[in-house]
Length: 93
Image (cartoon, rainbow, N blue to C red):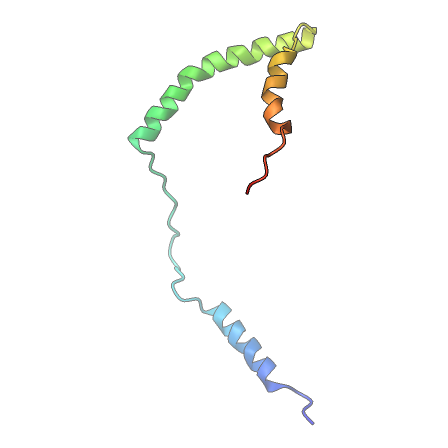
């Protein structure tokens, strides 16, 4: 009859030793992450900035309309946009 299972203790010690000494760990200063943005991404970001002013104006006008109660939804446009979600999907053969 075994009272103490030595394999479990051995596994624990191996785990503990691995945590104490990690290969590849640096003792000096840590490197910092760097990000490089491509020229194409910068160009796209600049294009978004031009649209942001127009979008901000549109959002402000919508906020004013909603807060004053003058914003009205065109029900036919809303129904056209919702209709594809309610149409039954044809069975596949």
